[in-house]
Length: 192
Image 1 (cartoon, rainbow, N blue to C red):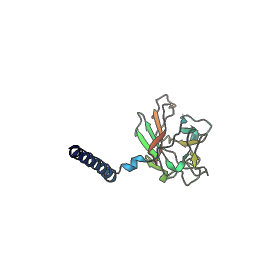
Image 2: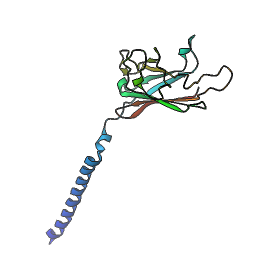
Image 3: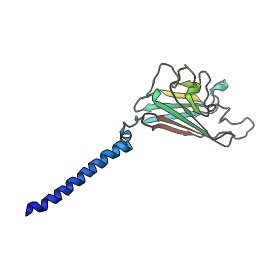
Image 4: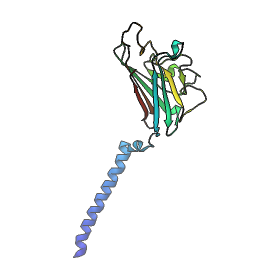
């Protein structure tokens, strides 16, 4: 008498287990959840950001310099990063955005058209306008190293006007993204 009551209960439990296993297997295959199980992004524990809207030397090309310095944590290959740059303010053509992509640039000391996506006038492409993200023999952003580039004053001018008028742009956001994991590894907002 005891064998008859146990048999239906065990068969129901086995059927439920088979259905759950099949559902999980099919969902992984059909919905491709395995992509979300990849490695997490690098842990860049600390960065500092600096934006100099006014010239720091006798030459005008020294203005509007962005510097993001890696202070601690995991090193990141430059080819694995993308930099999102957003400028906003009351000026014409703002807000605007550009992305620094396909890094490092194959040209030493300057960015090329293929390195800028979006508003290609926002980031300066002049010689000597970038460091670390151009081909200088360094392929890793590690502690103590600085990413440097310039914002074009013709597109977003953060400098104080000589006539006392307010600047054209008033906020600059710089986000460094690790492409393989799509993780934000550094984010700074500047309001000069």
